[in-house]
Amino acid sequence: MIEIPGLDAARWRKSSYSGLENDCVEVADGFPGFVPVRDSKTPDVPAIILGSGAWSAFVAEIKAGSSPATD
Image (cartoon, rainbow, N blue to C red):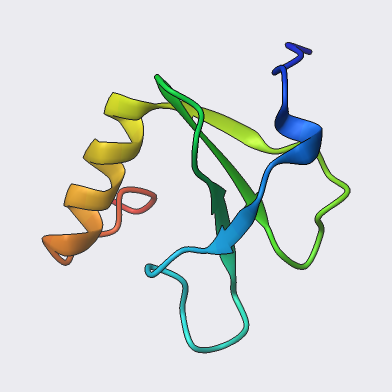
């Protein structure tokens, strides 16, 4: 597992792309080059670390109305 300096002190926020059914995706800002992502229901599980480009592509797919997980 890769250790990310400062991740233990990250300030998590609910992503604006979270659903209304308590499926909360949280992201942490302030990590240049990558985006830590976690499920708010399981905050003790290690975060998924996405490169900034991968996160941007994911968000673009969501905005376009498609689901990257099912396409």
